[in-house]
Image (cartoon, rainbow, N blue to C red; front, top):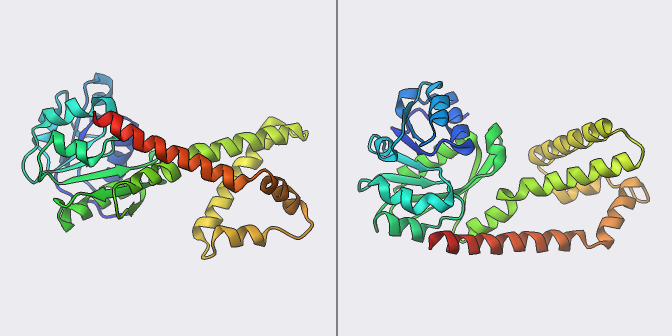
Length: 274
């Protein structure tokens, strides 16, 4: 658990699933509810947040004006209008988890010297098991970078990238990544039922195997390639299955898929920026 109790006053613009996950994580990490300000135009969202004892507002500016750090958590199509309405103060840190909104756009909508951090979380953050890629502009102080890292760590792990364009690769690997694993699970369940297992049994076997493999890969000091080799006996069942995958150019398919995702992420940044 990260100590997030000294982050200062926080404003969340938007109270959707990702913002809610971050807020819950921050409260669990010791941030006082009175330190959190949440704006959302939907009354039901505000009521859900009010149940956690945080401050809620209908108008975005009312939340932003009370905070040291503002988290932009709105749909990318709304980002331009919302950011320009916030009237951020000089030196006020803006952290964006709005997908596809690049720093060039955020700087155009705020000020040339506005401290900005752009983030790419993924959906396991909803369970506190996510990972977020971060990139800060030069206006961010070391303390503000640390604040952003602590804030996003409330929903899982964090990693800084050296250049903003690398966030497109982060999107391809981890942002879209859960869907790749879900697709594999889906295919394994279908194959298992085709082999005669009940759907419930095939699902339980698949999900627990995926969970266990992920834990082994995360906690082991060995790379995935070594772990794969360790469970692949020559001439055995695993080897037979992997031979089929290799003949179908499995690695090339994955490489092509991630490249397509990265290219689309870059295109979306341009489109949403306009």
